[in-house]
Image (tube, rainbow, N blue to C red; front, top):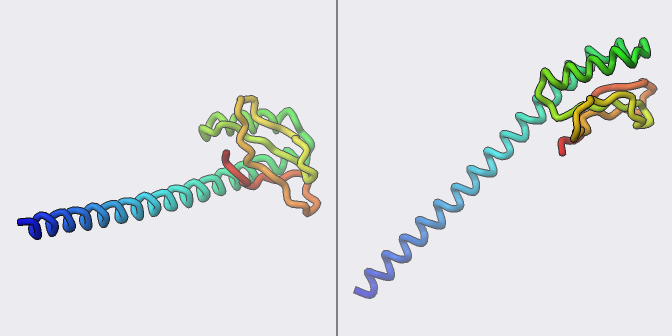
Length: 120
């Protein structure tokens, strides 16, 4: 009877351990998939915003740039958008609280650009 009880407890423990390891692996896989999807979506949004913002940056039209950023931020359900110049000086930011820094410029002579950096 003692051997049977030990064997049953051992098998239950092994099954529980395998279930835990498999669940942990699934959670990690899903997390990686969601992070990749978020990065892809952030890149698409940044590219779309870049197309809309570049002509306004070239024309130095800050009022229209602010309007575009606010409208885009509302439409895309973002917490906020900030556009910086090459020296990382703020050009325009959406009027909402809790700005997520999603824009950073490449040191390549551009006055401004839109590229996702980090999501806090």
